[in-house]
Image (cartoon, rainbow, N blue to C red):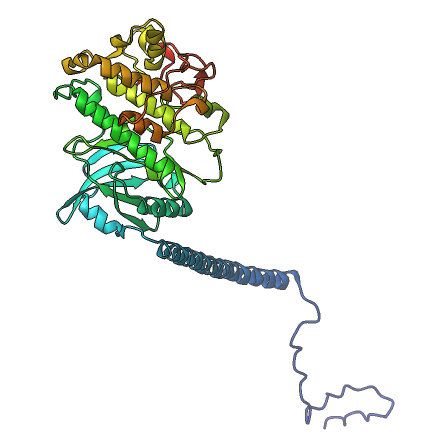
Length: 422
């Protein structure tokens, strides 16, 4: 029989298992008591990804909004600019017809037939209905809205038989065009200079006299009969156009400088064409008498049948006005008459009288030059030309130009210093 188990007394230590009934295990904490390095890296990487996505989106959105704001502001300004432009042209009184750019583009067959080119732009031949036209397309750089507006208003109010008629204009966005009557025989330089490409016989004395008279009448009207005194400031054969009957008309007068009648001078930057500029151009104190000087140069070209600055000639005869000065002092004016025309030589005495009128116009002192109305009277036989004149036509400060257009000399230049044909 096995022995009985030992008796356990209260003092004896024993292992008593923990009670399991009614005991709920404690849930683990949501976050660890401390964040380790790995957890921090994960969080930073997530933030960088979010920033990398949102930054371009936000930048693009900002730039898009900025672009739209700028676009609408500029569009509104442009719209307002065109509205003001339309209002300005709408206020013009007695203006000629207004054309669209597409109309003139079609009339000139895409500006295909170019008649010539000047300092203000190119001229193209065209046709509207049954009328031939000449369309001058102005360079934008030289024509602002106000200048063009003033030009249209001025030309539209001027009507004279010896001024080229303005038919209409175009002012559409950046386009500035003027529509003139077409002059079939072109410019005067084609007929007075003897060139290989022109087989026509030299003009006779009667035709040359008529042309000179018409030029004088056109200038007299601009200077003395318009509401505002108008100085052409670029009188030369290229700006004198001829119709089928050799009636002469001045062109480009709308691109000239306006002079208020209460002003004796107008201060302007140098413009015009070398060889036709009056001596006072260097002082920038210009009146309509500068046109009188240029007229005198043109008269001498018409009489002599040569350019006033001709590189093809010898050193001593390159400058026509210097030649005139020499010939008159030696009483040899007849040598300047166009010897390719027998009719001119047959009327040499009348031609020499015309030279005397030209010399009156070529006075260095502008106050000693005649008015163009006085020139017309001389041509019509109503008065005589001034006989007490200075035969020094080339001033010590005369304007001559180099190839780049800068003033290079104050005396007649050598051939190497002259820019050549106009």
